[in-house]
Image (cartoon, rainbow, N blue to C red; front, side, top):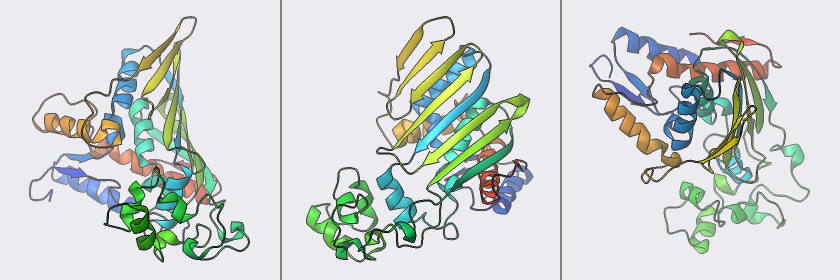
Length: 324
């Protein structure tokens, strides 16, 4: 495509291994093409507002950032225990499949290269040794009724209704969902499937000029949400993405509470990120100033950070450099 003269918009991940990512990057340089990546979170009203606050100097110099991705117990069970991203060999490590957005956000907000990472985590809960006594291979045949991961409970709940589309094309009535669920991969006991991706991981990042960041991914949360803490030399910023609110706590001053205006984000998903990403892409390709846009020379760093983090994790937290 690039050889034929096309600029590209790529979904995540760029590729599921470092070598292929770098090959695409080298091709973009060879053919002088623009490659934009669907890191949609940076285009959301929340993160766009945070970036503007940082660039305004209101926080002073940013020294360290902490971010958490709380996957949600039912989302983890669906996507990363039963679903398409449950197995590294069949998809990619959790840090890439789920958290490359977060690696990109940290790089984007910090505005500097990530130099090295250390990472720790593992698959602690969703394995055979934690299977309740009397449980069966499929939830539909299981006599236990109080398991929080029982597929019949999750997929007929308001939280799990969306995920039922993975195994049924019918209207999501309880009868249809339960009928089409039975005997599928999504009916599997979460303790008795072939998943091997982590259910918790902490990644520590060293940026240029001594800056640091820490990211926590956990399966063990009631809701799906991301939170953020940024510590600058003049103020700290604290916020929750899904709630579209943040606070700026100025040292020696007042606490400013902000509600993020999301009224324009009325089309598309990811809290408006899809909509605003396409707006920015249109502007960039027409030579206009486009907020949030970076090309593959920067965007690839999220993947390189992810690959380094996974190598570190499986090697007991050893330091891995982030480099092209």
